[in-house]
Amino acid sequence: MSIPGFEIPEDCDPRTLQLYQYCLKKKNNRICPSRTDIDQLDIPRLFPNMTLINVSPEPPRFVFRLVGTQVVWMFKDDATGQEVGVGLKPSERNEVIGRHAFVADNCCPVFHRRQLQREKNDYTMVERLMLPLSSNGSDVDMIMVLVMRVAEGLSEIQISPSERG
Image (cartoon, rainbow, N blue to C red):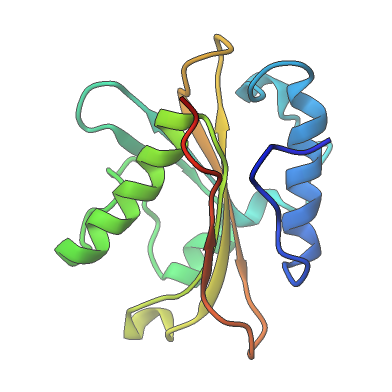
């Protein structure tokens, strides 16, 4: 089972693939799982590397609900309660908000690998798997993100399915 037009790269962290497969199983016949479908006891090793982002139709549209301890360590910042994109350069902010909007508006996952652009983050290369969650089965009300530090030698990429109409 997979999502049409979306594939996880073969060279991704095995935990990224584990979360993707877990969510596919949890979504059953729905477009995506709900937050209540996700049991941290099923995937305890992943939670330190996860963030949960509340999605609202009104500004601020994307707000960090939870930021895992490993994400705080990688980013040198605990963004819990903050709007997504706060403190970023305008060009970075637009790109970050755009990825979140794509996930929320299309109920589609996004995978990307990117080097962090700040000295305080040591310019670390990370990969992110962004997965939509919906409590009513149609509207995305949360985005679950897994952030993994990437081994040297892998290049930046972004994978998202084409927009669903």
